[in-house]
Length: 371
Image (cartoon, rainbow, N blue to C red):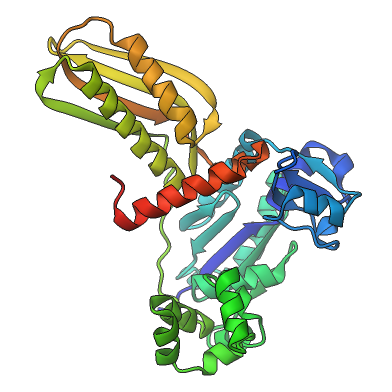
């Protein structure tokens, strides 16, 4: 059976939410992101993009490019609320939904042509999202994730494209190689230096040549440029909390040992948050004594996924909780009230260096293990 994969992406999501909250922003150039001297743009309206402003560049530069732009710091909680609203609408109307990020979704529509046309249904679904959330959304429909995502990006803003079966290579061929998912700025520059600027050129190159030049990445970009992508839809399940517990082999009263373990568990949970693109606002520490009595202590904070905020809070909870000086059987940490988000959303607080540091730390964990 031929697959039908739908990709949906909310247009300039942060900006669109701000316009729902304040209609005076409609039609005006808007920048969302850090407002300080080291702030970074998290989202730019299409009006601002005409001047060269875009997400990822320093806010100072964006302001120079577009002096008329209205700059907004942004609110992660508000964006998460609207993201959940759209997620709920989609979950109710598609067989299998994958939430790729706070504003991006995939749906497996395979087999739905037996009942009604997938493209017609997708069109009606896009209208439903807009009518119920007020947020503009674009979509692409094809046989796989890569082609559908590229189709969505070509359809924007607030539009849709269907790529018929067998027309994938033809659709991709005239596009810039930069538009192939997994081709980042550095790889694009390298390909450009090789004279490879159009997808058509990648399609005509031997797979072995790209594998020799770029290893596994070379195979991936060759397959995707040829419209080949066998990745499955990963069904979305909302996760409410994450936790970590440790039962000691021998009950202990060693405070240094327990605190060191609490820190390690909190650090691992912070990594899990960032890896899952989540942020937390509720921390809980648990202690079970040798007589099986169990105590917990909880604190609520602003949503974050940062070690340097969460770990001290966890240690403080442990200090307040452990006061009986009895042998301890178990300790545990839980993060709850999870929302979609990541350290990127904290760019509103001008944390570029901290963000880069955590990214480097997580890259090491990804390569050598979470411990």
